[in-house]
Image 1 (cartoon, rainbow, N blue to C red):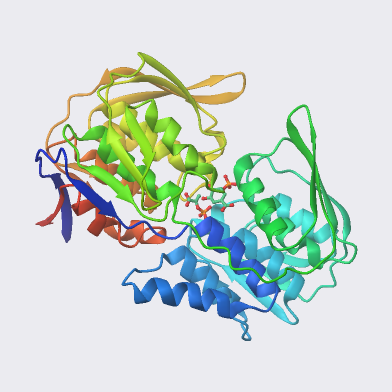
Image 2 (tube, helix red, strand yellow):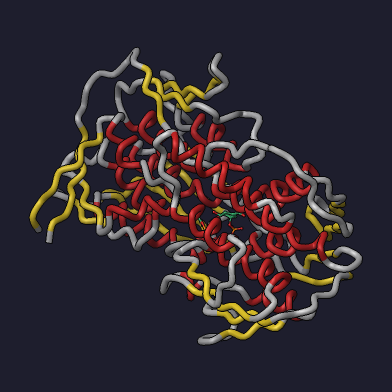
Length: 437
Ligand SMILES: O=C(O)C1=C[C@@H](OP(=O)(O)O)[C@@H](O)[C@H](O)C1
Ligand SMILES: C=C(OP(=O)(O)O)C(=O)O
């Protein structure tokens, strides 16, 4: 079997500027997609994707899946691949819109990603939903339903996507909808992104908080108005180039066009999380972002919380470990529900390149700790990506420090969110060579 080994071509790139093409934000696109479909304006999505492709940029699998699922044509089955966002958002969308029945299914992993709180809430609103294999999981059959509005309770403690899914269809329910939260929500910036976009598209949304936590969200009945908000570039993809900047000894300045500090993406905090690893983020005159390495050793010990920015965890943890920083990471309990069990995937990948992190339980919360324990390893490191794009991309960048080469179990994983990733990574000196295993 042929595989690819990734190594690093070390050059002094100080003073060079390297422009990186980031993919569109799939989170923003997903919300745009549902809004466009509900307002009968799918043409807008066609235009966004056509502009992207005309510029020679590939569109990520996740975005393509959402787009195809929402094209108004008769479908009996929708395959969401490995996209949790598509699965959760489409569940409410089809419960509202299908006039026959439709089956939502996808990869083996997607069939393990939880849906129970969302299914229960939708059933309470009158949806006909059957789980075809295991209760609370895809594949799922959604029948023609007459959804009611009013009040519904939801546990948002596993995924904010349950909240986003209900919010986006809420204006189209009779009388609108109030969602009462049974527990504090996770990934809160994604909920704010949804609310902000709904308000932009003309919907009245009120958030009620108690003790700093969202307690309920009220959405009034209405219809999405037209609007031409741009889909921003993806901050979570930028994190892998922050990795380069932090790990390379003499890196070029990385420049991203159409990425903004004034962003509705919660992952804009990447700039703060990587500042603690010595990377300075500035706005360019061309309205982009530039990254520069500071002459800065960083604190001796860092406490970090990923509850608001779960997707950044692999990039930050792999970087901080390779830089030899002691840290304690919390807000990681829900990472077991992602494309892989991300805490375990990161820990096992790091062991392959000689770093032993430990997992602890503190006040019923998982804590991942780096106490600088090393393992004797050498030779190419065979990393199991667990079919997880963020694991594949984080360990590609690890080749900057692990000089015996990184071999990934699947090179195409990155296509889920970042199809041009290998091409862009080569601009940083990452070299891909075919090997015979
Ligand atoms: O709403 C969204 O667009 C997303 C929400 C987050 O998921 P959870 O809310 O499940 O943490 C995030 O990890 C995912 O990549 C995208
Ligand atoms: C968790 C992610 O995505 P999704 O939930 O859409 O599969 C991700 O992109 O890291």
